[in-house]
Amino acid sequence: MSGTERSEGIGMSGTERSGAVGMTTPLEARYRRLLRVYPAAYRRAHGPDMLTTMLADAAPNQRRPRLGDAANLVFHGLRLRLLRAPRGGFFDTGWADACALIGPLAALLLLAERVPLLRPHLESNSFSAQAAAWALVAAAALSGLRRIAAVLGWAALLAEAAPLIRLYDSAPVQVIDGLWRPALALTGAVALTGAVARSVWSAFGRRRLATVLVAFAVLDAVAIAGSTSPRDPLPVGGTRYVFSPGDLIGTGGPSGFTIESASGLSLSLMLGAFGLSLVALAVAVLTVPGRIRRRLVVAALPVATVVLLVDRGLAGWAVSNANMGHAIPLVPIQWLALALLPLAVFTAGLWWVRRRDETLRLAALGATIDNSDPAA
Image (cartoon, rainbow, N blue to C red; front, top):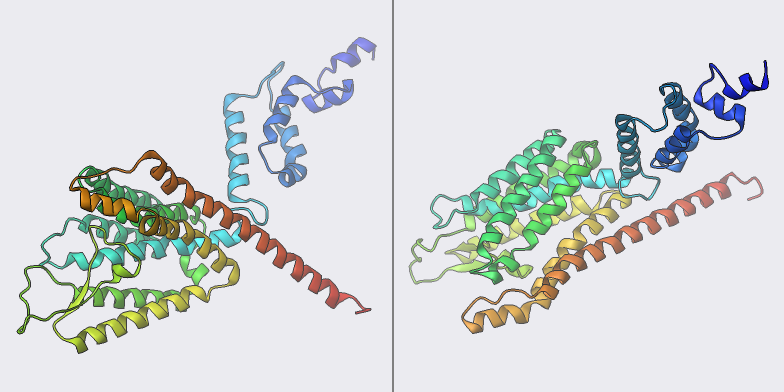
């Protein structure tokens, strides 16, 4: 074969042509750049085969990847990076299990907070739409309809945020006091989206999840039994015993409720059942494996940060609204703090979880090596 025939490389694939002339073709170079979207470990294992297949499928004299091929590569590469990140990444196995719990727990918590307002004799029942939305989210998540639960979770988040947006101009303090609800709703919606491949029953365990459901049922029953309307007549003697769960976390928002009774003994029994249910709920959640428990704590940090900011950092603003006699909106720096501080706390929590997991992994690896060392 002549030198001219060898340089033309007639009948060779793109890879063979580049190898024959000792250079990379423009098409191959562009495919290699697109493959960088994939994780390095995946590229090492599958990159050569993918590159050979794409070059063999290329048209004669093709210089650029087809638009569909490029989009497909980018989509699958990003999906691998986000959903199959290396150990310690956000969507690793620990986070998949944690998200499978966080979503239903958030839905059940928000449902439990709304349920007492569904009593027919209550004067205001304007938040029943949110209760119905979170009931659907919880039912879908517990039934294994995880994608439907994720979609419903985002819809329920909108249902939580919309009334607060409409109310802000006239009653900003009430809206800010209730910000923990959309914060928790956002956490639940994100978790439901990230847990589409995990079942809450397998991640949490059937016995533990059954305990959680019973605890929430008792909490709702106590809250409904102890909720009253302003139209309810006072008992003989004009005494009513009142306990407000919202006072425990400093959230007196527009849908806050109280547990009330005409009898001190009856109120004590209800509070006893309420407290035991909270203890059972806490034990069930806190006895999950450590890798899941750490992630549950980190997921709760943004909501806790919002509560603390509103209850402590904005207390003076709330007092000013009460004393001035007209609504005083938040200034941009206050909104910025409400948006960025929870995100910063969550980011720090992610870093801590990653470092903790890596420390435990290295400790376990060292223990394994020591146990397998004959000289030990």
